[in-house]
Amino acid sequence: MERPVARFPWAHWAHGVTVFTLTLLAAVPFWLTDLLPMMDYPPFLTFVRAFQDHGDPASPFHGTYTTGWPIAPLVLPIVLARAIAAVSSIEIAGKVLLTAYTVALPAASMLLLRVLRRDRWCVLLVFPLVHSYWVSGGFFAFATAPPLVVLGLAVAVRWLDRPSPRLGVGLAAIAVALLLWHALALAQLLLDVALLWALWRAPGPRERWRALLPLAPALVLFAIWVARSVLTSPSGAPVPGPVAAWPPFFENAAQLPEFVGVLLPISVGYVLLFALLVVAGATAEPAAPHASPESPTARYRVPNAFAVLALASVVCHLVLPSYCLGVEGINNRHPWMAALLFTFAWNLPARPAPRAGLLASIALGGGALLLHLCGRFVDFHRETVGASRLIDKLSHGQTLLAPLDAWGATEAFPVKPLRAVQEIATVRHGGLPNSSYAGYGMNFIQYVGGKNPMPGLGPSWLRHPELTRFDYVLLRSPSPALLAHERLELVARDGQWALFTVRR
Image (tube, rainbow, N blue to C red; front, side, top):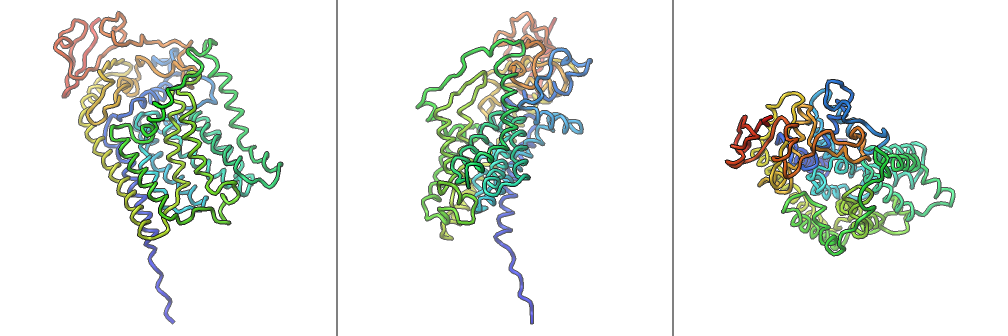
């Protein structure tokens, strides 16, 4: 008897090819330009340089920068970037970690979908979110933490369903890793796990309270860090400014879509387009509106626990402060997380035609967005490669000031993409930056004595007597008055960019 011919798994093949293609498109933009259009990204790289050099007596970072409490947010990405930079460069290390994030987020999402026994095609909703406001804004540690959050949720769901020592240790390790990555990412995981725990039908009181044990190590370390680094500055003085501040409610609510998509004028349009697609799918006879009896979520008090998690993040955006204890951007980190969490609450249509049409629309829409971003990154490279080449002209330890108008806005990326471009000179050559986030006493990298060793020049830089602390000034399209200014001497031009030495 002839053996039956095995069917080719077309569905598996199509899913794999689609996910691989979208992942590749999400990762490619980081490698299309020398400088990345991310306003707060160079300060993270500066931290890596400071961590690398502060112990070297030959470096200007020695005696001016130091490290704080070792169990602190940002430690883990700084250490990882430093390890990668040992065999490449700090900039390459940053790009490697960003690439790893783009691969890890859909991978972790597919794991959570499998744990929840939801359709694997729902992962397509993740790709329009990969280049979020936080990634394009350059908020490196928070932006690259979501894969750990999603992985933690996958482990937490399994832990609540069938607890075991291995799962408990795994959840504890992920929570501690998130603390060392970014405190607000840890807060997101704690919020989501607490909601799952509250919705969970525990077998009994003992099991319910025992289920919280994996979170204890991270909470203890977090409390120690807050006591040592947040409530006091390195000098022991209280954190300046108000304890907390809230934005106007309706203005804040209207800005919710802006914090979901990429930091571009097209962002809100894409967010609304994908929201319409999601609504269309949710209203078209879902395939599995309730959890099956075998699903881990069958033991929750609501049929769709992750819908509750997504809604909770929306509420957090509306009610939490925008500033608290010296940290800016508290509430506005939640809209993106709400969109991501909804990926795991969404049910595809049951009928094949609406299902196929919806998935094709999301895949093509996500691909079009990522291709559009690739084009923008290429255009940004054309606009800024001259600046990168001029920065390369500096020598080891030399300093750069780049007082650019409109924070270095470009046609490709109009929202502050080069705000901290002067710190790229620090990253490449090791000279001290004009200023850095080391001034926040809560960071792992800190100023010695809490004092910036450089003058921190602002808008009046050209008249400031301490301009001579800098070796070079980088300007874009300088005016004839600047070209002839007595304090500056033109060294080189590259396109619209000009590099000056400072006359002493």
